[in-house]
Image 1: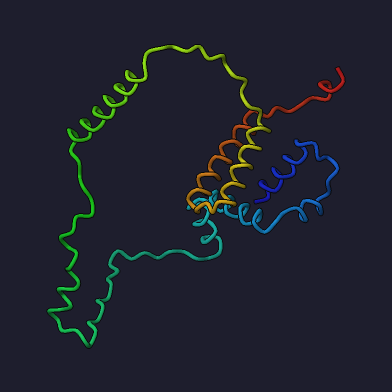
Image 2: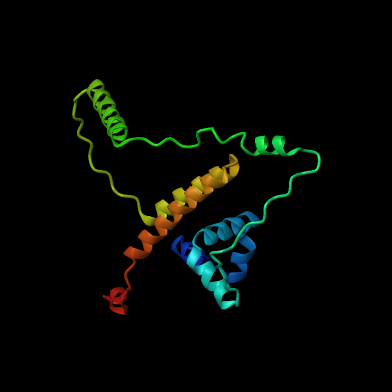
Length: 189
C-alpha cells in the first residue's frame, strides 16, 4: 500500500503539481479513492504472504490425515427415507461436460473457418494506415483514470474493477520497467 501511495505522489509530480504537500494529498483523497487503493493493494497479496503472516503470528496448521467429519444429525421432523432422498436429489444432474480431444479440435477448426470467412467477406483491400505515435505513460494513466471514473459513475461491478486494477498494475509495471536513473550531467549538458 505504501508503494501505491508513493506512486500517487509520483503521478502528481509527473503532472506538474510540484508544489503540493502531503496534507494536500490526504485532503484530496476521497473515501472512494481509499477504497480503490485498498482493493488494488489486496489483490496483490498472495496466498504465500498470508500463510507466512499466520506462521509468524504463531498459527500453524496441524492437518491430520485421519480427520473424520461427524455426520449431520437427521432433523426430527423428517424420516430416514425422505432425508436420504433429499440428500441425493441432485446426484444425477450433470455439473460438467468432458470434451474429447476430437471435439476440442473440431471446435477450434470451426472457429478458425468462421474467422477466415468473415475476413473474406470484408474484402481483401489493403489500406495503408500510417503508424501512429504510441501514447505516453502519462496519457495511459489519464486514460485509466477516465475508465475508473466511468466505472464509478455507471456502477461497475467488482469484477470490472478487478480487471481495471489488473490493467493499472500492467501499466505501472511497464512504467517501472522503462524508468532510467538520471545522472546529474543529464541536466547540465
